[in-house]
Every structure is written in structure tokens, then in C-alpha cells.
Image (cartoon, rainbow, N blue to C red; front, side, top):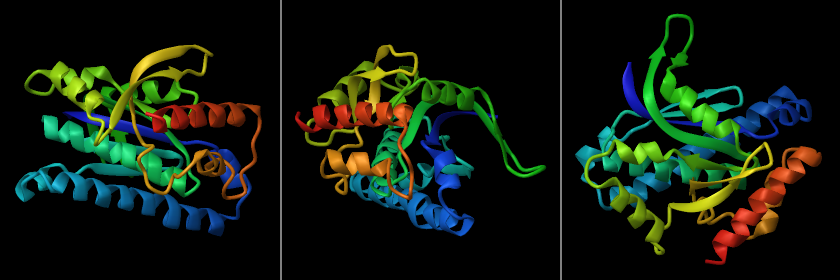
Length: 238
């Protein structure tokens, strides 16, 4: 058991994705969409942070990744400021990359103990995971929330780090936003700014992400689309 930063993501519209595609098509979507997005997000994160991080430190920032059906789990054991920045950067790149590939995701980043076992297949368990899952499951859009507690455990003045990230207009990775919740309410949270991803050029790209791969739109999905488009438009205007 280790205390770690843990991100949990859910693939939106997964049931529809499975039902509207053959098994071979589904595996192609995962191989050339989801897995490629994970790799692409890692490359971009390494390129950006690698320019300001010694190579020996970059090795310590590597994230453990698990994909189980429609769930994606990131575990970052490095609890430094750099470790937190790395997983935040990776997550926001992943949201943009998957959206560009027609696989919109919703997630939460939190903190806590987590263990990975391999006695009967891979098992991931711990409060860090449930914390991240609880954050993810409350939202009603494609995007993700960062638990403010993550900033409480890193060294130095955490509020200065939050303020620095929120005020960095040149390299935005997080912002404060009234997140739409599944119960109809809104909650002011720290969220990933995925809108910088260069393959998402306008709101039509966001809308098409929910339609790609033969997916259908019902009222529930349309509500998620509207909420996601609203975030995109408000964020890109600033």
C-alpha cells in the first residue's frame, strides 16, 4: 500500500460504443483511439515537462496505467510538486486526445492509499481509487475535476502553486469552474483545461466526439454535450 495521486476516468457512452460496433471494430477503436491517445498524451506531457525537468527526475514521474473495460486508472507514486504537475498535465492532455479520437471521457484526480495486486489478474484497490471514482461519477460532462486535497500534501506553499497555475495564461493546465453535476447542481471546482489540445479546433469537434464510432445521442448524452461545449467556448474565449 502506498499513498499516491490517483486519477480515474470513465469512457462516456461505452455501452453504445459496444452495441453499435462489431467486436473487431471495438478493438480497433481501443487500439487506434484510446491506447494511441494515452501514448500521445504521454509524449506531449514528456515533451513539455521534459524541457524543464532533469532526465533522472523524469524517470521517477512515470505513471502506472490500467485500462479495464470503460475505466482508465492512473497512479502517480511521486508525491512531489513535480509529480502532481505531471499527472495533471498528462490527464488534461488525455481528455483532449480522447475527445479528438471520438472517445470522450470524464474523470477525477484525488489522493490516498492504493494497492495493485496480481494474484488473480490485476486488482487495483484503495481509498485513493474510491476518492477519484466518487469525484468522477458526480459530474455531467466530458472533463475532469482535481481534488483540492492533492495540493495540501505537496511540499511548499500549496496555495501559491494553485494560484500560479490558475494565473498562468501562457501555459494553462487548470482553471476554476462551476462544474455541472448529475443531480442538476453546480460546484465550483479546480478542473483540467483540455481545450488547448490542438486537434480540438471548435465546438463542432467537441460535438462530433460524442457521435463518432456510430454512437447515438439521447437526452442524457445531449446534456453532457451541451455542458462540455459550454466549457469549451467559455475557456477558449479567455
